[in-house]
Amino acid sequence: MRCVTQRIGNGIRRFSASAAKQRSWVEYDEASSFPVQNIPFGVFSSAANGPRCATAIGNNAVDLCVLADAGLLSNLPFNASAAFRQPTLNAFMGLDRKAWVATRARLQELLAVDGDDRLRRDEELCAAALRPFQEISMHLPAKIGDYTDFYASREHATNVGIMFRGRDNALQPNWLHLPVGYHGRASSVVVSGTPIARPRGQVAKDKTDQTKGSIYSDCKLLDYELEMGVFVGGSPPPLGRPIKVEEAEDYIFGYVILNDWSARDIQPWEYVPLGPFTAKNFATTISPWVITPEALEPFVCPTSAVVQTDPEVLPYLRDPNYTSYDLKLAVDLETPAADGTTVTRIAETNFKHMYWTARQMLAHHSVTGCSFNPGDLYGSGTISGTIDNSEGKSINYGSLLEQCWRGANDIPLKDGGTRKFIRDGDNVIMHGHCQGDGFRIGFGDCAGVVLPAGSLDNAPTKGSEGSSAVMKDIVLSSYWRSSCSWRVRIALAYHGVPFENKPV
Image 1 (tube, rainbow, N blue to C red):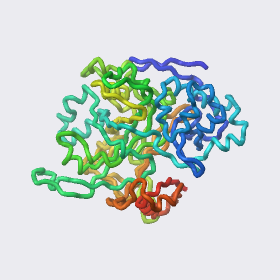
Image 2 (tube, helix red, strand yellow):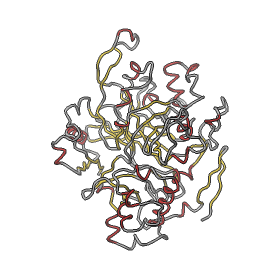
Image 3 (cartoon, one colour):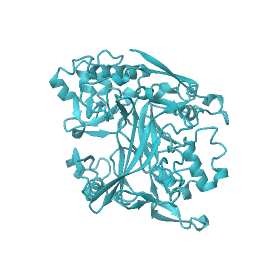
């Protein structure tokens, strides 16, 4: 297979020149998020089986346990049956990069039109292994032990700084010297499609005079933050030994789209002096399929900063391959309407708008000797671009806080309505893909509908008996003109009934 070399900045990347020519015997169109060039990893369940490890091709999940039990993965350098029979990807994530790359290559061989045909010609095995998306439910890909969120887009940090401190003091003195971050809550990371109850908490009684104290209130300024999430894998160094930036790539298992839900009116009152707390810890949504660095390799590009020379970063943060990915990101807002729902594209940005790379984030996170485990997750921080029209407004901003400029501007919707922040019943749907020549590497949706505050106050606790024990494998098929689907979601969520939302 012929490869070409691409030099970007200080780094060199190699990728297959024949990637665009790869074809699968599984049918899908050029707009599919999951062509044979992708081969993501995730966890699904069906009416017949509980959670199990999978990849995706076209509109199908591919059961890796079925492939392993059929002997089709026997040449891999690990026990595939044992690894893929698990309800999470943690065991697979705990292997090294050579094992991940070998698995991806073997799956491409089985799914390519000119590859190993043992799966293709066995109809019974195909029926067992390939499960249409409409027949399955997706789960979190891993048991997430720890979650950290960064603040790594200079454009976003500058915008927020201008709002709260003025243009002359937009960036804090440390921002260009290290990737700023904070520890989040792994327990509230949820998979796409999980309803999100509007948070409640303390807000300032008078935002112009915080000495007047606080009140307990529903969040009035609920926001999303469009980010990328990074899953850690491999066998990271033990406690006390930092990860070098040059080796950080070996511990990056893959990427997901991440929505860092944010309560903008709770945050200002509580964040001094230790940073975000309850304004961020109530929910983080991620897309279910983890996309590998190998799938993204053809789309390596310079960051929006291009270089880090003013100031020059400390030696332990100097990334010899200071690049990001040309990954197009978008946010659609599905809003309730009298005659159904309306979908408005409200944001478009790109993962290249990063000042700090995923490798630098990992190196800095571990600089003090902090250790990691397979399945740990960290977020990039909100990804924003630059102002892109003559009115000083931008669809390239990754949060409503920036788009409405702290409430000063209305965001128009297709049906004539407007938004500044998220209302009850709104469904925030994030998308992302890299566009190749005749194929795209997609991530699938990262979506969540917002329920009214208190909707889940009486929901059954984990492990309690109730309707959730009776109702299983629920699929809510939502017609775009239906105005009641979000109320059904509230009822299901209230009773603790997991469900999958399918547009029809």
